[in-house]
Image (cartoon, rainbow, N blue to C red; front, side, top):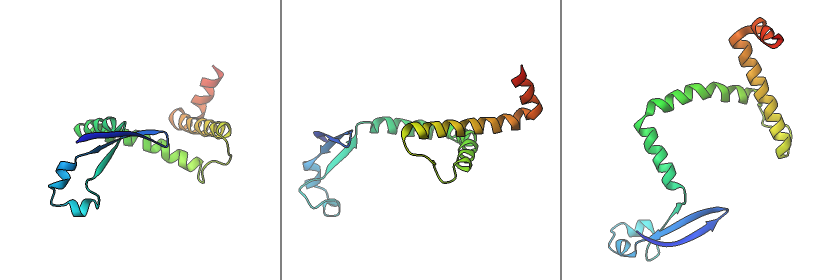
Length: 124
């Protein structure tokens, strides 16, 4: 493929590639494009995504472990914020999210050490 140009689109950089010679001799060109050749666009960070996909394919047990660790937390957060955020604005949403995180951590601490253990830890 030949590098065609670099384009900025909505704050992201995309690289456009083409190969007119390959398109001219391709039997599937009529299904692919109506123009003389096809231009393929790639995001500037596509190579990072491909590397991450290769790592995930090499060690699927890591992905399974991550899922078991994080799904409980996300499920609880969705339970604590059932309809989304109640406020608008970045600072207010960050404050609401901090409260939700505190509620999650408090709920988790109660599950792990119990009320009496938590009270002893707080009292010092």
